[in-house]
Image (cartoon, rainbow, N blue to C red; front, side, top):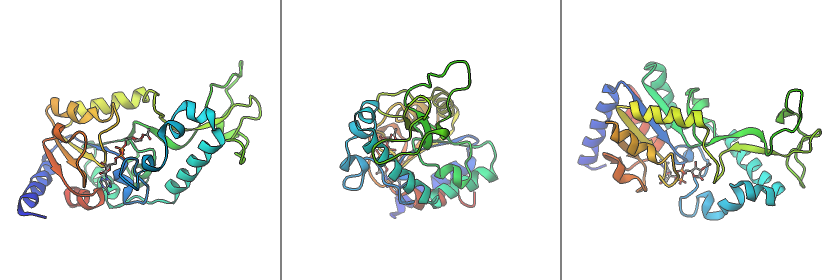
Amino acid sequence: MSLTEQVELEELQARVKAARRITVLTGAGMSAESGIPTFRDAMTGLWSQFDPAELASDEGYRAAPARVWAWYAERRSGVRAAHPNAGHLALAAFARHHPGVLTVVTQNVDDLHQRAGNADTIRLHGDILEDRWLDPCPRRGGPPCDPGWARPATAARPPMCSDCGHLVRPGVVWFGENLPLQALNDAEHAADTAELMLVVGTSGAVWPAAGLAARARRAGAWVAIVNPHPTEIDTDADQRVRGTAAGVLPLLFSGV
Ligand code: OAD
């Protein structure tokens, strides 16, 4: 690390210490050091090997449900086998010691922030471990069928309701779908009220999440990006720290 980088990091550390409201917006790079692949990193990113139109859209799922379900089942196994890294743990420890200061907003569909201890993480893109009906349950005059009752997947089809024949889908937001409204409202509020926003491990390619950095800055926050590579929203930030989540976040948050 150069002397300038060292000084900038120390200044950011001082901002973390002083801020009464901190929002951390995370993306796939946050979980990269836990072994979960990102989407857009060249070579290793999921979208460098797979077509998002086929695997992350309603049309793609309906066209090849068994194949798409199998892909999500494999990703679910990866998430279940992964552990929070030093970055997740540093954020959780800070939140424990400074109640009411930190809000974590994530685009990640894994549960590593929650497992680290940030139970109230705002999830903009859903939860890959959640089961949802692909179509609304048609049952009338009683409670809707619960996706947990579905018949397990086979090689030929995803889990299916034995009552209505409906298919289960993963609880993630696909391309073309709206973000969960409450989560988006909460995230915008967290951007509007932050004194400091850290944007960690996101390429800034997907909206509306990517717009939260500029929104926070307009509202008066100091915005710092933590990423080993340039992002599409670098110019929306006051500061760029070139490093990884598990490397930089413990330096910023531990012992504060
Ligand atoms: P991307 O894959 O687009 O970007 C990952 C970012 O993480 C890149 O900028 C990398 O440089 C950075 N990165 C890689 N390793 C890192 C590390 N160890 N520490 C810090 N940063 C690192 O992922 P997202 O920006 O999260 O949508 O993608 C946004 C959305 O696009 C995702 O939520 C997903 C995808 O389609 C849904 O799942 C709905």
